[in-house]
Length: 370
Image 1: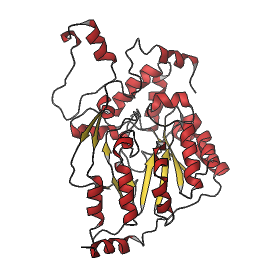
Image 2: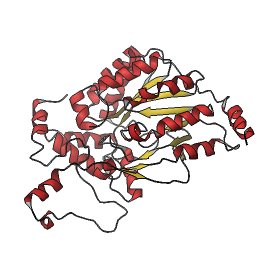
Image 3: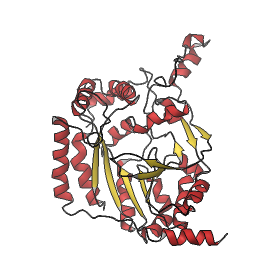
Image 4: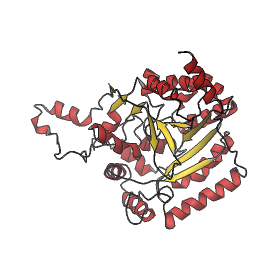
């Protein structure tokens, strides 16, 4: 997928003040702010300080927050009455297309670089979850880790909040789904296998491309495609239901790799594959346009025009039922590739059904302790 020209672009990025290891290269103004803050480099006294301000990749800040609740109801027809919980807000993975970027503005940060550099950490999440699951009115509807940012992002290695949440879910025998693109999930195989024994867990790996060079540009701090496939194979071999979400498909960037993703998913034990086309809502459009212009100047206009062609002339789309698949010629080409690959590599899709019968027993047992 990457041409020699693109390789040279990467080598020239220091001249363009490109921050390696980060996805977003700018901080668009927060839409809720009436004024815009612009750094004036002329105020810095020395050339060295000005260069550092432009090129230095700031260390990630971890900010502890204290929410009143951890479980969120997702009111979206596309997601079928889903409940989710997020141990972190913001994400170091740096995926340039991430829809969660816009939510960072509610915390008074930018959806750009600050989304990757300022991570809110919810250390009290396990306590809040336990309190929630003790509620006699809760019926045990499956939840999702995470509906917004990745629960296995790099911060999890230090804080281990996701692991603690899984321990609570197992304690209550409550069904849980996990979506991630990080192989750190292998660390928690002991808990996941116990959950899987009772049909209480399924895992979805998000995989955008098998091209490692392209992957490092699209999502610089995620696991390699090779390691994601290994994790799929490991979890599947341990009896944990795994599927793949090939998302997002971006025309003229990674869409031609969908067939190979589906083939690799099948070969490594996944039960099924889904796909979603890219949409650039809110501030993501500005962030993505800056990114694609810097990384793929030879095809930036083509990429943006094809995205618009899939969404009625705009780069964004919020119409339920249509936004995930798009419309028009380029959306149809992606759909045909998906349909062909699924017929070839997944002639029979293994379905999964959560076991919701155990939770009421274990919830009531918890109450009997008091």
